[in-house]
Image 1 (cartoon, rainbow, N blue to C red):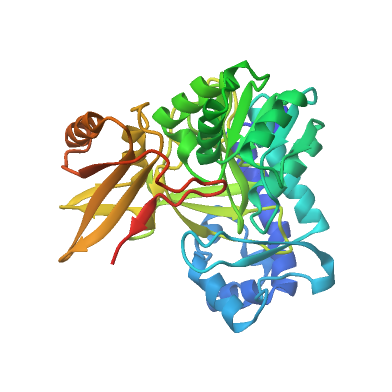
Image 2 (cartoon, helix red, strand yellow):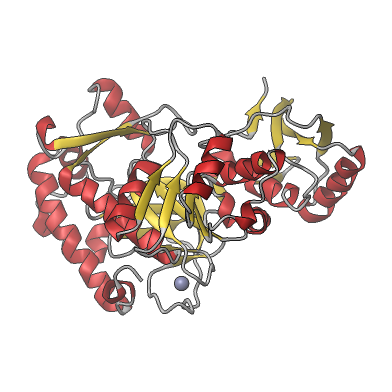
Length: 422
Ligand SMILES: [Zn+2]
């Protein structure tokens, strides 16, 4: 574990720790953060002393991404969710824009160190230690994910190997030359590297990589995707969840039994997205406790999750989300009355090893979503089998079409496999 004391705190002490951190944070925010002060005073909260219990916390208003978008549009370029003057901030990142307009996010020295520490839990959870050499096949831009992972590997004391500005074959060659033992990237890119390796006659399972850690997409939490990555790389693949506006909050342990939420740094709630009542399965709502300069309090993540009730065999007391992130609420498709997450489609497609890449086309047929799945495969009979598997496993018929190999886009960062046609 990264911090064995915190990760095994009894529930009561964990809750007390969260409340203490929250109260200290609230005082700072009410004094200096215009966005929070306006929001909270509209809800009747005047001072940090009004925030004494969990009941008080549950009366704090929820925060929607659209509020940050509107605030930044009205007060460009960074909006008003800033607790300190601009000179205190040292890093800028931006969301990918995969769900709505991109938003910018600033970090201070303290909150950037906090990010690194949070990633320490993620990498240590995946079994990475100071003897590891961690490769980041990533060109550093505005996307926060691997910048923070990079800092996290350093915080952990591992050797960090930057793989930016290289094409995929060069990256494979460097991983071999530098004896990288861990790989951190999106699940899509891990799969793409496997494909490139095969084309170049390289067997990634023979490389010293023993652990892969994946962020940016839910892929590594989908059993068929994980299996394909693990088999191809001869390594264990770990899922991780984080958000630019929130932090690196979710990680897997050696049990690989869903995502743990780092409750020493985040408060997690699961609500019914319709009414807002607490739920076992629903939308994940998060509060970060270590990012005073640019906080997100009771933030609706838009991610669908399910709470696991049994304690994890690893001994951590942190909340566990069974199956990781089940899907984005705004990605959910309704096909002839049946709710389908694209991740469920991917979970089936990835069982077919003959299919290298795929794309989901969504179009409106009157008032209904219709879905067509394009699969790169040489043998058209595979498409027929896939069509039958969708019928059996999802309970709906989906149109499946075989397309030529290498005809669909490849992805280094977040994959965009769902395409909405007009
Ligand atoms: Zn565990």
